[in-house]
Length: 172
Image (cartoon, rainbow, N blue to C red):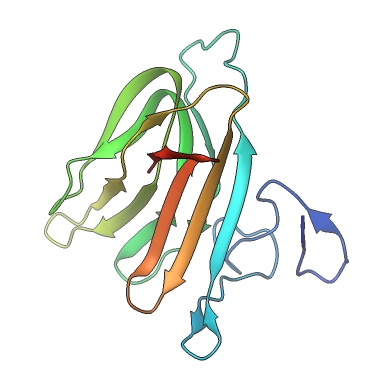
């Protein structure tokens, strides 16, 4: 666990620690320091265990993730790097460049993939348009350990990756 930034010396787990200060996902006075050339750049690594499939799905969509949420800035909203484990009728893909139109598909078993979701203001229509970029989807089995990695570099910007621990064939 990591320490919380609200001066109460408590620890936290499961994504309850970090959120953008004054943002929609806030859970304390935290931000994401990305780093500098002199000090190096931010890297985040987490793991999760794939749960058993639910006994009943009843049309529910499941998303389990570790994310970095950058808040609403300029013409962008929901600027979120969010590799995720999905089940049900899930956002799991994209049309790719140049429009990055989000795509949904139904999954009866767990699947995972690296995902970037963002919204932009369409100045022609005045509406907010959702966009998605997705890496390859891979199956995941209950009990497997998945990792999520976020790396920040000056050259490439953010690089996100999700995969099965010790299985280089299933990496998104």
